[in-house]
Each structure stands twice: as C-alpha cells, then as structure tokens.
Amino acid sequence: MDPFYCLIHTPEAITPELCLLAARTETAALPELRRIAQEWPRLERLELYRGDARLGTFTLADIIATAWMQAA
Image (cartoon, rainbow, N blue to C red; front, side, top):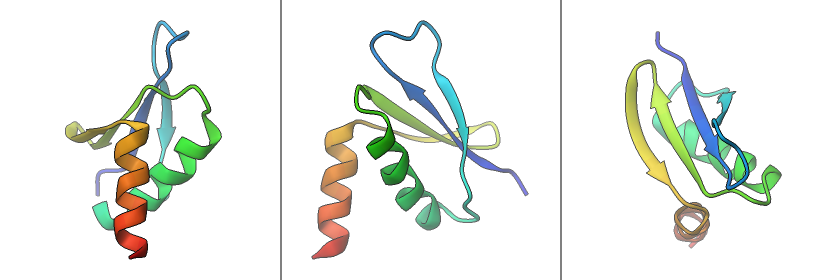
C-alpha cells in the first residue's frame, strides 16, 4: 500500500517540508491535512500525494471550507 503524505509550502522555504500522514484512505487524509494546516501559521499550500500520484493541492482557504462543509 502506498503511503499518504503532503508537501508543505511556506513563503520563506526554498523547498517544501515533507509530512507523512497517518491515513489509509483519502477521506482519512483530509482531517490530517486540517491538523497540519493548524500547525503551520504561514502556510501557502499543501500538496497531497499517495505514493507517486498527486491527489490535490489545497490552500488554507480550501481546507477551512472543507472543514466547514463537513461540519454542516
């Protein structure tokens, strides 16, 4: 099984940070992205991957909107 991970892009970083996610499905990866977004105050975007496949790019606004929609 390919692991889920994300690349964390911030304005001051030349290269993004890598973060492995404790998730087995895309649905489980989204709460992990929200948790990571809360830990990085100067976040520009997160890129979600499963193995070599990029699943999506999320800005902080995307993550907040997703959390709001799931709470409703």
